[in-house]
Length: 166
Image (cartoon, rainbow, N blue to C red; front, side, top):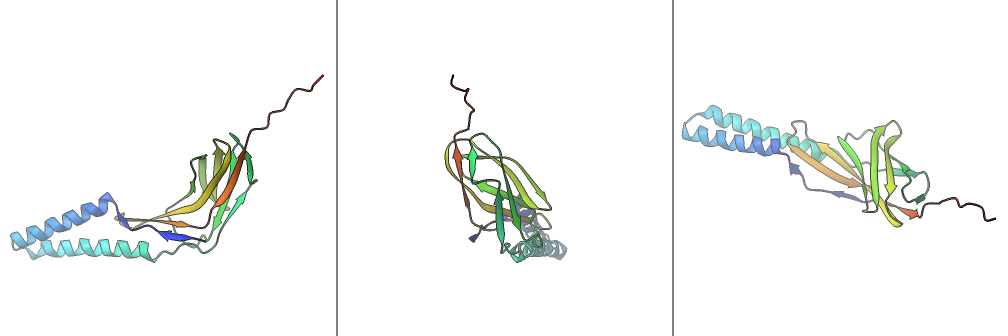
């Protein structure tokens, strides 16, 4: 299992909170108003707490994929069920796919993340790893994590029934 963490990325709301905190600090110093500096400190503390909440959540240890078949005809949908530890809280989950696969639908249910992928051309295509997203409570920080390995799907030409030879 591979697990790579992307750097924390502030959202536009987080950048706005930093700009407002800087403005409050500059205004508090310029107008000798300590209340504005206190408000800036509260905003910065909220940003630090947001960062800490997304830093605490760990990647699930066990991720397993269940494929209908490792062979899929081109143009035919293939159902993939990805199961991972539900005790971890993530706001979004998606399968990363190679350029030869198209994800037609994704849903999260009791059995896990259910994705329907359609091969667009012949060949070996990679499905995975799982991309997990966690958004901070104030919406100020976003963290994306990739977890689990990848699975190869072999796309074969579509099977077309031929008319009998007579």
